[in-house]
Length: 420
Image (tube, rainbow, N blue to C red; front, side, top):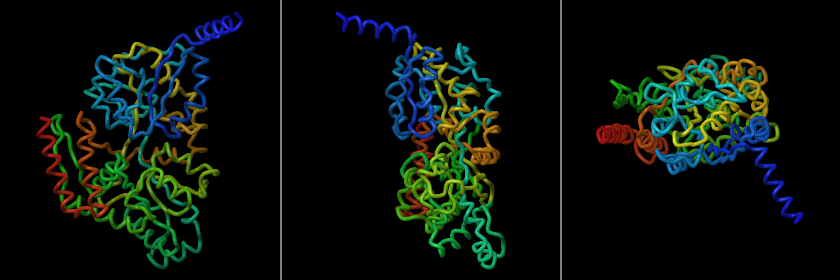
């Protein structure tokens, strides 16, 4: 009898404690892990129980496609890569219709930079709220740049000061220089994932060409063959100064190589930076400078890769889901989450925390050179697959650069014609 009574009391307490429960699906990294550390604070403040499911980013598209449809939502709030906003945009509740928060106020569109909020645009309206300001930033070993012996020798060899590379040509010189010191100048992204598409877009844009351009509301192939070939050949040259395994490097391999002190300079996503600054995980913590990416012959290009929170129209718990999204983007909560590894998206947080989080300065600088992937098509995953497959084929010598560019143009035109 006492056991039964105890069970009933536990159930009653749980009912009183949590007025509602929601399921949230997001990718798994240091950024989203920070939410877990303070999740009980949210639940206590709102009475909303959160089932937070974190999975690898590469699995998000398939998982979301299976669980969010026009008539069904097995999750009440989903994190969506900017590249997939077009795929799910029609299934998401417009941000203008999101309920006001009861505990945490609705985030204003002026609290987040317009260029970042634009990641949530679909068909002329916002269909969610960014939960990070993900953008390419460049990271360089500051201790190597400041080494007096290296400075003197580099100046003698190249006739200018050793510094954080401002151009890709400078980066190449520094790759050549540091090879003689047993340090790899660069770490590529060559794993078969969206990161490879981002690399292609960055280098194509840096050399003065776009893969696709929007004309009268439709994408058209705009890749300049000669400029694309120049970009590929330059990247292949950089890869000669990369760590072992350069032909299949993804996030984990690049993180490990840089944190182990093997690499001089490379790009990184802001959400991953805390691992490089963690003294328990990184040999170079405290010795990194963060800037916008080096300029190519034509321009600087910092690829935007934001994720947004979207509420499925089919969810029956939209108000509670919105409350969680407001909590993640709340100013006071954001101060605490940033300490746990979250990269803020709010302008006021980036400004306030830039002193203790130097990569936020890099984010602000990179924002001036932001470029978007050609991701405002419901068929972007297929378009991206063509871009990355041929780019990787070229830079890893599975096909010639000429074959890769010609294949890319032909296959993209074929897809666009098929989707008309």
